[in-house]
Image (cartoon, rainbow, N blue to C red; front, side):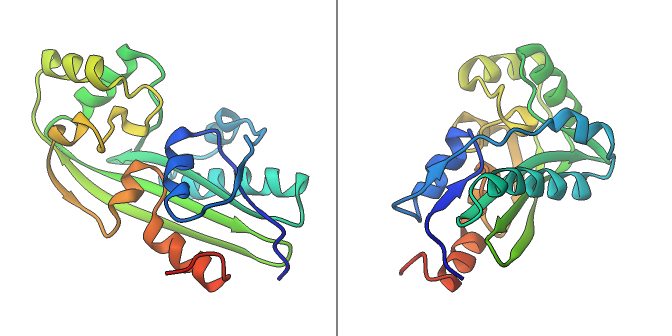
Length: 194
């Protein structure tokens, strides 16, 4: 495999910061895909998150076919209902009210595409949210402004206080990119050292 450079197929500041922890040189390119159109055709959370990660990576790889492209997507699965980025404070309140006192799954999919291979994997984190009042949720949203975060929380900030229990094998997956598995894959390509 001949990798000229590495591209993160994302405009997410969170993913850019996370990838910067393990790679010193990469570019970010925002993929031109219609996520809402894809979401409208799929109802299974696991399949949808994988498809979105793949579509992001493949869209950018078509533009830069000699690069390694990393695509990722994340969503919340609340008893089969898919929760994405709330975009507004009211939507965030609604999402958090639905999750209050319950377990949910946070799914983070990654797709790596090179000129001769495609690798996909998904991290699943299980989280149990505390039972919280609407006033508490509004206070949290005003504090962290998690409007561009799947599930309406930022675990790396005050959002950690929303939870009673978290079951994960990679805490960075909650923030947007599972660095433990990604590091393993990039090491196998000779891109990440110890």
